[in-house]
Image (cartoon, rainbow, N blue to C red; front, top):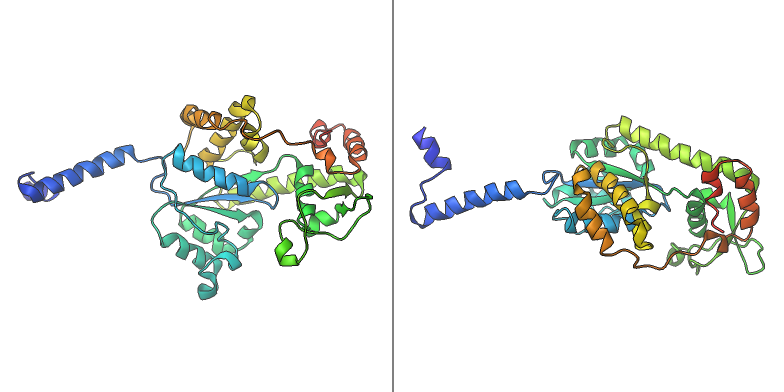
Length: 317
């Protein structure tokens, strides 16, 4: 027993002994101060296109560093579940193996962004389970705003529902603000749009919400989302930036997201709230979406007629 004790807990005599004792004390102290989920390396924001997930990822990383003390890793591009964005895909020809190569290249925790449709690939499901990744599914509550964003980016699904219009209000060829350089056009964020058939919009928006919840359920069934109730709302996460009075709402939603990551619980709320409060109201309130939709009154009338206030409120007059 003495030999074993001396091996692990050497008598602190002489410079070497003192260094080993100091090192041991530091390891014990570091373990006691380690942030939640210090042993977990991979966190993933799962979202659909135009859900605000890029902003959420930037803010989540800041919060993980500044509030929870995680030494988050820097990456050039966080959408590493995409073949074309993962530097190891060309070599491995398997996106699961390529993601693992990225994760194993550095011991620091990493935050990734992934589309909900990525998990149709068994190789990705397997590697994220093996890595004990924690995921949070972020969703845009205002489905109309999501579709406005999507038609500005010329997503095929949205262009069947809406069209960009010219100054006279007539539909025109789609110009993407997001992919302008790639597509050789000059889309901006100021294009106005038209809902092609307001009477069908309600069923479409309900269907999109139902699809998001089915996808969340599917991720749960794969064991990938474990600590999240309903969809996490982008609007609630972002509310503090526009309104000092929305800090509590935002803090509660951020706690939901960080709990899904396994690094927070309700006792974390005061620190997170103070962090958000220090940055609250930094942006002017957004204009209503009706200034972008040329037939907003027709759309509002159609959604009010459903008797569903949540749908009707999606048109901001």
